[in-house]
Image (cartoon, rainbow, N blue to C red; front, side, top):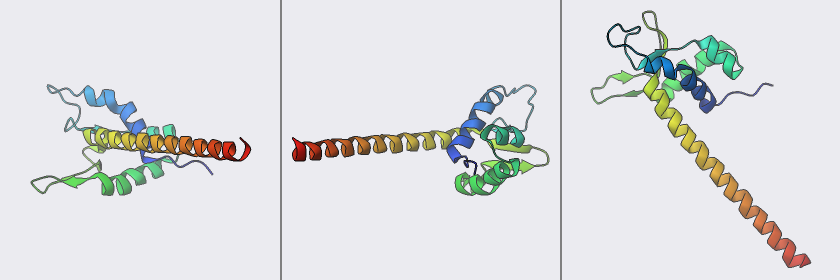
Length: 134
């Protein structure tokens, strides 16, 4: 079975692939409706993470939207991902960056905790070994 990509892996691909597109928004003659909405190629993202494009679409539309979309102070829904006729498939790029930053921080905490646990376990094993054989 192929490895299923994590939210972190998918968002890293989207961020890295579309950062330049986000930055290149032209206010004089815009190529999209809003700067924050960046069109993405589902096929390209799917290929990069090694899964079927329906899997990426489903993750973005059903999972990410439910988990990361929110209502602003005016009650309007701010969506993570949209699939509209006039806009195409696009992500709220600043929201992608924010979620990615949180997931990376969470990943760092997990790795640090795991490393400290492994170090503590190693020290305990050495101490037990020295107590019995030292």
